[in-house]
Image (cartoon, rainbow, N blue to C red; front, side):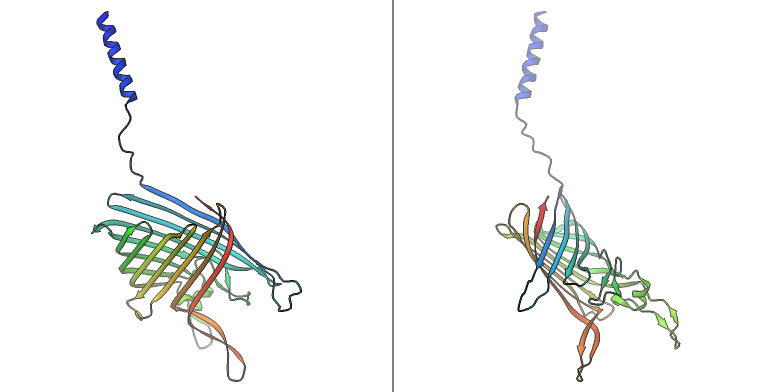
Length: 314
């Protein structure tokens, strides 16, 4: 009996000792990093008996930017989704859209060499939510969801020395332009082949809703806090079509400076520069006799937005 009692006591002491021993094992590495920011931005101007003139205006834009990134040993997988939609009320004009964006990107990489280089495959999708018009003409639709839409697939190499910088180079890239609208496709909008008509003006061949290109692609991204409560982000995308006029490089360059006032209030300045030789942009011009006419051709497109609003980071 004494032996049994002694044995039970020894087991109890050993169990207590193990329970009190601190766990020195390293925690499992975190494979996924997830987060994002959502918010509503406002801009407003109001004039009362203003001698210099002016027009009341109010705009509101909702935005959501989320990410989910995976990293394990020699594998990385980065996913981002950026959404935005905004409306503008200016004077007595009808309510207009002033922002509309869908941008999804997924990038999968495997370690290549020298610590920071990865063999990478990338997929990107861009489109919009609602109809677009050539204001002040609000009777003719010039864009809508999937008209246009851009689907890009690329295989290349990615230089990624840290979490806030990436430089992706792809010599093998497929770019597909979708114009899911018979009217816009027939007009040859966004670079697709237009419809064909006979001498009597009767359509004999529909416009193509899909245009495929093959070429080289470059994407640079940088996002980091440059000062306390001040974040700078830039994204530059370049594409050259090997088959048709490779010297005409498509450019999409976005920049944003975000200023965090407190946990919920923020301000931002953003710019977007686009050039695509295949997208004709109408511009009103005046001839030598003073008459106005529309000139259509490839143009440098530029957008700048200054906004203050509410945001929440998660």
